[in-house]
Length: 496
Ligand code: HEC
Ligand code: HEC
Ligand code: HEC
Ligand code: HEC
Image (cartoon, rainbow, N blue to C red; front, side, top):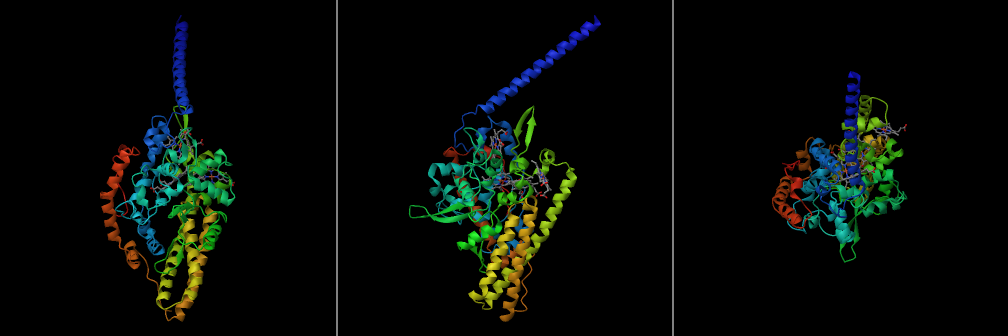
């Protein structure tokens, strides 16, 4: 009898467990069907909150990118940068990247975008919004690419308002991965790479990132209406290596700006992250950006993609450890060694190239001629382009360690060549004893290049307390912005 009771209790318990399990399976099935039978979301719904009710896990983890909110002022960390970028926006304000959640805020807050007072003022073109927001592909689709690329940045203040989100990487009608910016496909074809149509699903797990984490420039183009458009263009038709893009820009005599001190026609590298990744061990094995930056997670038996794009070293067990058999600490030590090797050449380059700019400035002052300066300026142009390429393509030291060191080495050689030529020229002009000033603080460096920092901050504050508030109100009226989405966010900047 006792035995029977025991058996009965056991069976009941088992049945209970089964029922619970079935209920839980059904619940998950329901959730899965919800995902499989894609809910109706408008093709150009750019308000990320609208996706929450259908895709709560992806949305919540996406929103966690806001935890990465530290501002690191690179001009303070490396004051030579101010001299390297003299005459260009990056001498005003330059911070390391933060979470995707802040892309629009940071673009509006940076001193580089200035203090426009209406839709037609300010230093930057519309193209400056291109990698900040899902509203960009929406505007491109609604108004056409040429209209989007025409005019000043402030033209779209009340339209481009939601930070990098779902519609940047997905088509909401199917939730498939989707590249929504035409210039990437144009670039791939120009480079002789697989076009988007020919790319595999695994390729797409990197190509969605390559919409933004690539090298690009603004190509001044006739907009077909008698005006000029600044069109985002990937300089890839000569190839994807640093020398190929350098040749591309040289062939068209392109410059981003003229250096204020050395008068060099300069190139600003953006962030050839995808191109650098391709040259590394992971890129060569097609380990995608998402493999490391968006690992799978499981919650209650449901597997989903973690959308908190950040530093993969924060959860090595779900990223690196999927493929590597060595211990976490060994891998970390390996990475830190790579970082140190890069830092060494990185710092040497900044010192050498900054000195070359200042010495070239002195040579002009002492009456050097254009013909005498031309070969020197060419060396400086190439040195800075290459150094910048290696360090602006965020952690290339990890994504592509050998290529990073190779490029930094060649940059150092070019800077050295410029300085040997400068030493001879300065001696011939009576400036043999000239020693470039040491640059030990951001403030001192901004003084050397004559940058009106306080005025820039003042203009920006007027903008933030005036036009920016109007933009947000208008965006809400247009139905493209939900103020709740940014509630409680404090603006962090390098200047207040
Ligand atoms: C920077 C690009 C990017 C952004 C932004 C992004 N996703 Fe994704 N998403 C991905 C990638 C990559 C995958 C993995 C797709 C694969 O391999 O099938 C993915 C997968 C998904 C999936 C499929 C299920 C899963 O978890 O794998 C859903 C649903 C999804 N994302 C929803 C969203 C939502 C909702 C947002 C906005 C809150 C969003 N995504 C923003 C890149 C992005
Ligand atoms: C629409 C353009 C865009 C797309 C698409 C995009 N990014 Fe970004 N990413 C940015 C911008 C802009 C920033 C800097 C944001 C800031 O500092 O405000 C950034 C920052 C980052 C950071 C730094 C985050 C931090 O917390 O420091 C990482 C990592 C990153 N992106 C990886 C990726 C990966 C991986 C993908 C593809 C799955 C991707 N991004 C897709 C534009 C983009
Ligand atoms: C094998 C793993 C791996 C792959 C693949 C990978 N990354 Fe990373 N990524 C990392 C690690 C690790 C870091 C952090 C390195 C460090 O500590 O600075 C990082 C950092 C970054 C940052 C951070 C920038 C910053 O300074 O905050 C960006 C942006 C980025 N990756 C973009 C990409 C893009 C775009 C791709 C694909 C083209 C990619 N990554 C592919 C591992 C990877
Ligand atoms: C999807 C699999 C995969 C993931 C995830 C992955 N790796 Fe790798 N890793 C590889 C492959 C494949 C190679 C190349 C091995 C070879 O060539 O023998 C490699 C090579 C390396 C190397 C040696 C090559 C070099 O660049 O110095 C290091 C170091 C490394 N991985 C670190 C990491 C770290 C750190 C992470 C996590 C942030 C990571 N890997 C994530 C697959 C992966």
